[in-house]
Length: 50
Image 1: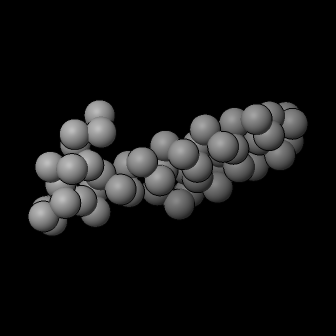
Image 2: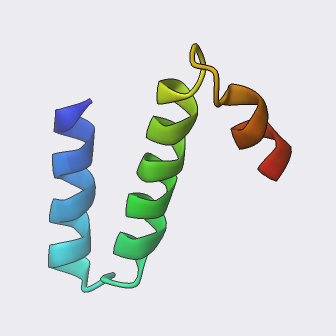
């Protein structure tokens, strides 16, 4: 997982695609939020947003 992220950031640095960084960080944060809220009591509220 960390290898893939490292390669993505290396790609962005070499090819000057810095506009991709907020998209990737947002997707990672959203995925982490969904995984963290999957087994908790706040899960219905998180899923109601989507």
